Amino acid sequence: MTSQLQPDSDLARLLADCTERALESGALQPIRTEQTMVEEAGIRFSVRWVSSLAHKDAARVAAVSKRDPGFNPFLPPEPELTAAALGEHHLAVLNKYPVIANHLLIITRAFEAQTAPLTAGDFAALARVQGPLGGLGFYNGGTEAGASQAHKHLQWVPSPAGLEAFAPHLPQCRPGESGMVSVFDWAHCFVRLPASAWQAEDAGRTLRHCYVQACGLMGLSSAVDAIAPYNLLLTHEWLLLIPRSAEKWRDISVNALGYSGSLFVRRQEQIDELRAVGPFTVLRGVGLPR
Image (cartoon, rainbow, N blue to C red; front, side, top):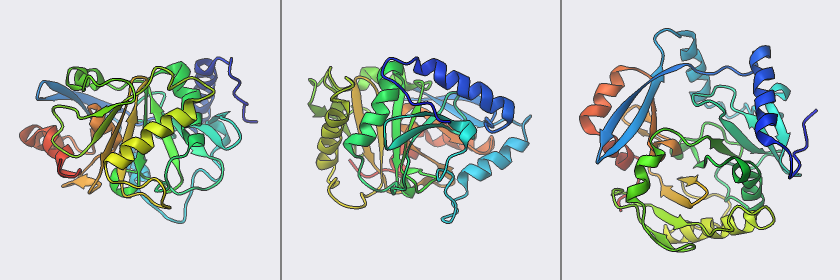
């Protein structure tokens, strides 16, 4: 039975207990990776690839990448991976094949398209996780933005390696105001969040207001059934929206985590290619001109 998350519950403990049980049952199958750092413009990007000592994990990567329109793993989600109810319309579900530890999916109970605009309810569900735990929330809006499933799901991870390196380049705008990240030469919108953004009662409305603001500045309508592809990242302090033009640069897939300084490649030899051109070339290539 899914635990109903209460405002005063120990969410970290709840997720840890679910993770332990899912590992024991085999429902949770982490993808073991090796990691290196690639630096550009003073920013150190974390680059992961499947460990050469874990060949079976390549099959897991293939399972994540395969897009079968007839298969929906969220209707219903695996009980062993379902950690908590996040209100009436959302569930917290462990990522079955995580590359980053403690990777959580925030899914709608009923089917909604991944290309549909995010609602105040979606943001309220995210806030029930990210409000107490911090970390990074993100969203891959459509296939071209790196989404591997068509069912609407936000995602949350503890802050990935590399994110702090962007701090000196963030605009010093006031809460509620927008700006641009100085080293990003592709289209994007940065919004500084108000201090009250993650307060439980108003989090959904406040965060959606900032999201709609960013969408409007990027020419994306949040009043349509399907939004053009984009990535969204949120910390406690800011929101970042990046319109997308393609899922891949050559054969390197990019999702929202790429814009937080965390990239994933399938083969070790792709790292040499990434070093040769620089991560910014990859991110620029799947975005839109600034």
